[in-house]
Length: 367
Ligand SMILES: *Cc1c(COP(=O)(O)O)cnc(C)c1O
Image (cartoon, rainbow, N blue to C red; front, top):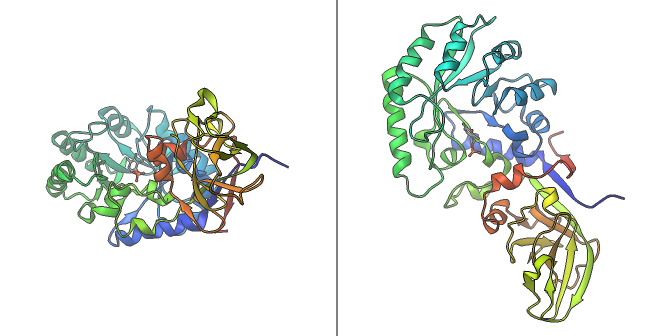
């Protein structure tokens, strides 16, 4: 027998969410963002499940693209941050990758290279995120250099990233979008702007391409959910079991530091999952969890290999009962990773990418 903790990955749900992203933006093509090992879900398996419906994939770096090519993925792959050193251009050429160009040195290196065929380039513009890219003023010259180098670069697009597309307050988002639209008009350039929140909530930002990421995994990135986000399906279910049960009188401290003290006579259960698996130690008392498909709460500090839940209101729970830390329980009940993240003072992205290799992934669907 084995320690009862697995991350179940529902590849049908992934495909459903991808199709939802396409439905939101019927006039765009959507590159499936599968960087960071597909947000912790396994990039090769996710790419295989989406091959045939997604026209391209996006990753953060060459190593991630190599992994996909080695897994037999033949579809176009975009390097969202381009190359990190000039020598990576040889691999870009050999593997037939597309690349973002965000800096002068990348542009110089590409234009000085002799690729066997031109590289599709997404020129990155800093429209207000102030992380990567050319300022709108300097992007124009960079674009014209690329356009004058048909041996090195082709399929030019302007790419930019929004800092606040998830927020209800659209002021800064609108500023960024206005700068991009003005630049695109001057250059007659196709655009690639929308991340998940812009795909879901800002059709005016949809371009030739969109770049949905976290929504593909069933997480709702919006500050205020909308009609579409309610249709997202969780892809990862982090599932464990109760491995011990005890009854305590009122007033007993539980776990490290005794942070939680039984407020009444309580029945508590120990779950085989902890921060050594990637479950966030910042989870507060009251962080939701599903036991036998019923909502209850984490009590006491998360430890490395275990955490503790309150079973007082779930008398049928016992050793071996199903525990879902996020995702879908056997009875169909869903606990969203977004809700868990709020109790950990973080975002779904860190929880999903944080599930450690010790947790076996088990795939089903889309075979
Ligand atoms: C990660 C990333 C995305 C996807 O963002 P989500 O919020 O996960 O949809 C899109 N574009 C770039 C440049 C990224 O780095």
